[in-house]
Amino acid sequence: MTTSGRIQVLRAAERPATPWLNGGGVTREVAGFPAGAGPAAFDWRVSLADVASEGPFSLFAGIDRVITLVDGDGMVLTVDGAEHRIDEPFRPFAFSGDAATDCRLLGGPVVDFNVMTRRGRATADLALATAPRTVDVPAGGTLLVLCLAGSAALTGTTPVTSTAPVTGTTLARFDAALLDGPGGPYELRPDGVTAVVTFR
Image (cartoon, rainbow, N blue to C red):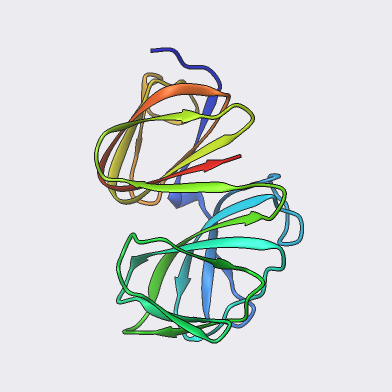
């Protein structure tokens, strides 16, 4: 197996929660680029959100969004007047951050997974893995692996920040691994559902 590049492990337990301005929930940023960039400056951003109450989503001009239900009964998103029922876990829904979007919960709080990219600066390909597969870091790109349910093992790398053996990394629920390089192939073995996001 040939690999290069590096892997940074991002543990869920070390991820702070940021309350929404409208008080409707909290967001936990998993990773973003450039690192530390605010809402007006990121090229891409990945987060998990606890949605506790109904209401409008913030507008993100120039941003493409993909939202995936992880926990809860789901929600209805009204995007520019059109209703979309998001009630099936692990089924991504793409929409524009420019659109006026309102959320109605179907049965209490939910947890969702969010991928945002700035149009013209970055694109994201999102796949959900439930069986072993190989993953690669594209030239000039970045790969994010995030365990959404169960656990996942990622091998063929040398972790930069991890207590796992250097031959591999184990991700618990909501843990993530950020890979740049290019490099690969890496072997991903999910025991549940793991998101694989390729940024270019």
